[in-house]
Image (tube, rainbow, N blue to C red; front, side):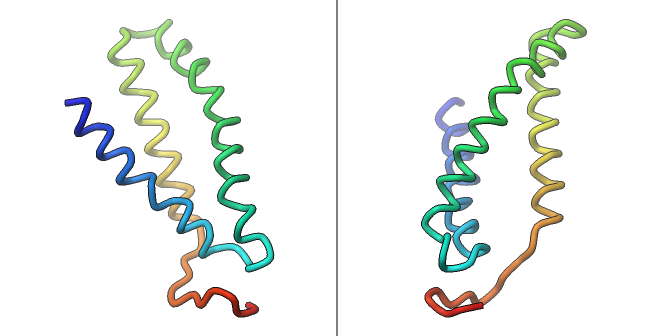
Length: 94
């Protein structure tokens, strides 16, 4: 079971740096994926607080499920609000 979970996680999140590179201008294309990754690490620090908050009100399994639900819902909102760029040609000014 853990293999399939990790396979799905890496399959879903492995393309994010490439997508971020397509969204930003050429001048910061190398900087932005790493910066976004570090911002994600900063936000991930709050997950333990969120899990403890859920865990104080419900069982451990429900706390994990609620945490995953919050992460999935947040991701869906951010993805739906973000721009989509098709046919990006790297190396050309916007």
